[in-house]
Structures are given as C-alpha cells and as structure tokens.
Length: 133
Image (cartoon, rainbow, N blue to C red; front, side, top):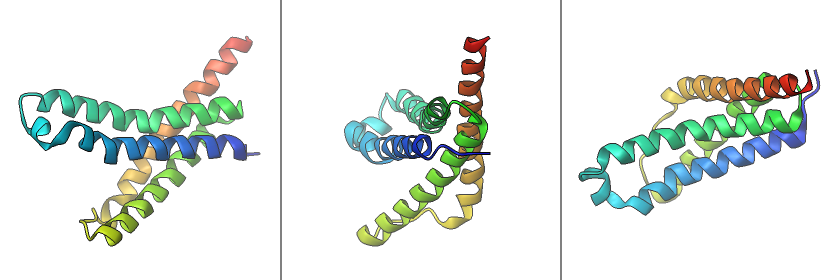
C-alpha cells in the first residue's frame, strides 16, 4: 500500500487550521458573555459542528487528493493531527502557564478523531468509485 504524502500534508494542514479556528478563534470571536447568555445553545451547536468538521473535512480532502485508500489516508490524517494538536496544546499551556487537559484523554481523542477522518476518507473514495462506474 502506497500513501500519498502530498494528500496527507493537505489533510493535516487543514486539520490544524480548523483546530486553531475551533479552539482559539471561535471563543475570542463570541466572547464569554455571549457563551453564557441566551445564545449559549446556538454557540454550543456551532462549537460541536465545527469540531465535527475539523475531523471530517481533512479526512475527506486527503482521501480525495490521494484518490485511493481513503480510509487509510483519512485515518492517518486523523491520528497524526490529533497527536500534533495535543503537542501544540501542551506547548501552549507551558508557554502561557494555562491549564493543559492532560494526556489521559489523548487515547480517546486519537481513536475518535482517527475514526472520523477515516470514515470521511472512505466516503470520499466511494464517491470517486461511484463516479467512475
């Protein structure tokens, strides 16, 4: 089995960008008052949708660019990206003195994110196969 490095780089880069938007910029944009006010339910829904998109879109794009083995390409993107974001969060916590969520949840997120990216990659590969038929 041959992995497409360029497709993996695209997927990982997209995951990291979406992660930063989700974790860093979204809270800054809405502010704490909005997150605890009347719009808390809407913001929670947006937060969850963006979190899901952070996994699904990069896996889909990586598999689409690779054109084959979408499940594997998506899973690799999800796994590597999750480890990288955990490292980024740890470095950020050390630099800012902030709270780090801890490594005890990393295996859970590694499994979930890799599966979601792999699922999206599988969908992308199946779409390509359906169009060729």
